[in-house]
Image (cartoon, rainbow, N blue to C red; front, side, top):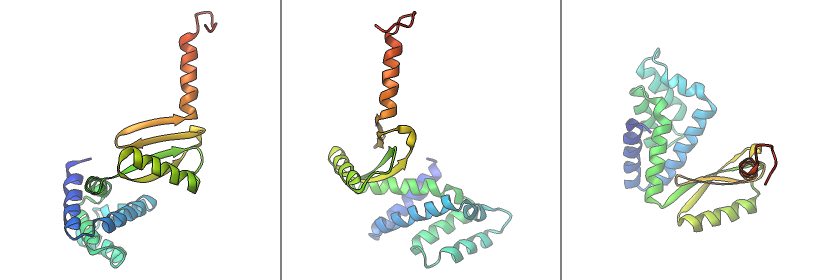
Length: 185
């Protein structure tokens, strides 16, 4: 994360925390991040230096006024004015980090071969809460290459309990135990 993203994201968080709207603004920042990822042309438009700063700010204002909290809109307009709209993701990440720190929350990135059922998600959530002592948000990614099991990243730690990892471990054990003639001990 750049210093710019940290300074701006943390600054927005401090303002929102003082106003007790930090949770709502976090949700809006995440939604806006999704919009930017789903529609990268919008972010490119806000970053297009062939348009005047006023035109770019007007575009952001027209697109989002009444759709997001005024602090979120003004924050985005500041980024656009500074030619830093592409730093939005870093700012959102810094904001989320501050929020998680202050609210004893964390995000668990979970990769599975097929989508978790409602019950599996609830069971996993309870285990992760007990394990971390924090409120946990699960971000699920489906990747058939894991074959089964769960690949989990939370609080900077990675837990790999996937079928793919277990097969790789068996393969490595077989290679280590094979003699030069290819016989297994």
